[in-house]
Image 1 (cartoon, rainbow, N blue to C red):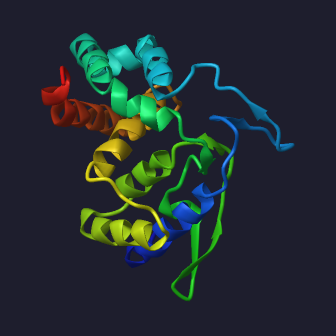
Image 2 (cartoon, helix red, strand yellow):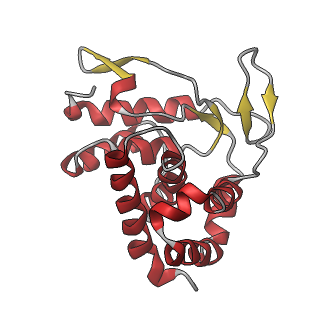
Length: 198
């Protein structure tokens, strides 16, 4: 689907179908099908753990670390709800991993990061890798898959997607790529910073 963003709606609809597979609790899914609890807790735990890492602090700056911590407190209610979800999550739901045949999703590749959690991780991934002019198709596809979208669905996706940006900053990716990640983190702060004390 990398070169076929016009099929973003079909990808979103498939995402909802995948998330309908539900587990008993949020967790990692092992290769044998067993599950293991997240060592960091939920989204907030992962973000807190990431903000303690020297690489992350160096890339985004100490002021940004403080602002994200404030945003996490302000968003605790919404994040607690997201952390309670336990559907099947691909974990890297981007166009390079989605196969399209005759306008429909024929396969999803690379399940290295699969887990039980919130489908908003996959939604955030899909939104991030899809040109903005196709985001309306993603919304339509999610609804066609049976998802009842709340008004704040994009904000929920952005909150969860922050985990990916922070994780990338500790990876072996290029400095140029990490600069883009840091810019996305700063953009996140600007979008959510005004609601940090809400």
